Image (cartoon, rainbow, N blue to C red; front, side, top):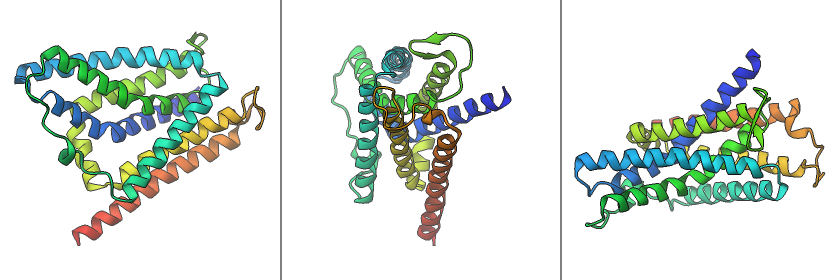
Length: 255
């Protein structure tokens, strides 16, 4: 049981960190979206946006878990994660991604309170898709915890997916500027985050290829010790290399 709980804790830590790195810029965008409102209403708009994000994530994760065993859905999810990973890493390598603080423009004056809340909600939905798919791919191969299911997966797996997303949302509301400063200081961390997204996409692809209706890989391979060791070793390696490269570049720039 201790080993299972440790594995759950590790996945939760990865999900929160990934959510933070991927959504830091997005949180700043949403802060700018409410900037035209009076200060007391800015906090209310972001609070309602936070509540809406909780509701949306629960509903979306529930729907995803109902469909997660369909291999076509797994394949689409893998393709999407690999696409956004390659796209963002390529743009960062070519220097096409600008600092969010420079590219975000002042919103148009006159947007009402509830229209602003709606815009924040839509932004939350758009920003949540990649992190939710990553959460599903990371959690579905965890050992079962508990005796009942939610949707189409074990309750323990669902709980860690939901907790990772919700903690990430709260973190972004209250610590967005810290993550933005971290990414400005170590931009390679954002690249590493998208590489991790791509690697999670590979994990979802492995699940697709091992699906009983596809049969390219053995059905139990995604749950095997060999694949588990390979997956986490590569993921830790990506994090370590991203941190080392970020620290090295920062040291060179300071010199």
